[in-house]
Image 1 (cartoon, helix red, strand yellow):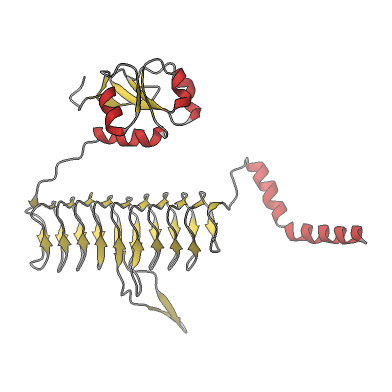
Image 2: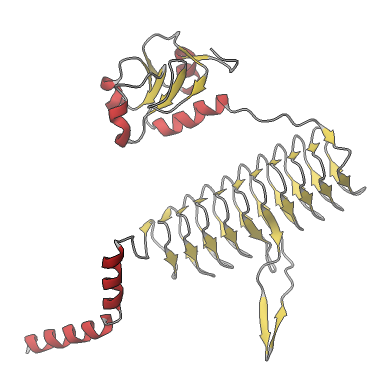
Amino acid sequence: MSGNPQFTLGELAERFGLEAHGDPATAVDGIGTLAAATPTQFTFLSNPKYTSQLTDTQAGIVVLNADALPLRKGAALVANDPYVAYAKIAALFEKHPSAPRGIHPSAVVSASARVHPTASVGPCCVVEDGAAIEEGAILGPGCTIGPGCVVGADSRLVARVTLVIRVTLGKRVLVHPGAVIGSDGFGLAFDRDHWVKLPQLGGVRIGDDCEIGANTTIDRGALDDTVLEDDVRLDNQIQIAHNVHIGAHTAMAGCSAVAGSAKIGRYCLIGGNAGILGHLELTDRVTITAKSLVTASIREPGEYSSGSPLQENRQWRRNAARMKHLDEYARRLAALEKDKGQ
């Protein structure tokens, strides 16, 4: 065994309410894939595509569903959702770097800012006037906390995170490097021959247990706040415009974007590189597949798609050429149907 913590089959079953099969003393101290795991590691099977690897895996413990259990020769944990069970077990082996309490000597903290004694303010951080760093919060290297911003209890800003102004993070929020929250929204008015910038007077409110990916940007509101409710999960390089409202437990994949004043419901899934136009509303439990563009409000739960799937290049070029004549074809077909009806 390595120096990692060890857990037995029996301990894992009891802790996570899973059904154990095999020797309850079987112990693991790490994680591996079905193909590469060793006898001292655990793994999981959730995608049927990899079922063929189950009979040959060397893993000490496998998390799987009841249907796959007959194929497993060794120790196993049966779960209704093996992927969720894997996520919970894997967290036992995750190691976070220690963050010493207090303020690093290179940090600059305003006299009017409030930093809880149990918080950690890392090297080269800046905490400006009226900001608050709550109990157990961690600011990694190079973070900037602007005027009036609040970092909630047990939140962690990994590194180089910027909270610009009037940003409030709830409890246990995780923000990855390079994220910018509270920047100016893209508010402009055209006055005859030039643009006039609209002041962005709102803020950003982010609920508990949210996660913000690397280099993601969330603009503050023009008047009201931009809002992320509890347990919203944003991937890397996402753009959230001013006055957007995202409901609890919604997740958005990388490079997606939401234009100003759009409202997204709860338990929604937004695929990578998808776009949602401004002032639209998506009801709860809507799934938008990757690279789709939402141009109208969605009132019913379900899965929605747009865009063109990948094709072999020659086929795509032929179809693209035919698209130019689509209106002509439609008019000719309507004329034929009319003649046939007569």
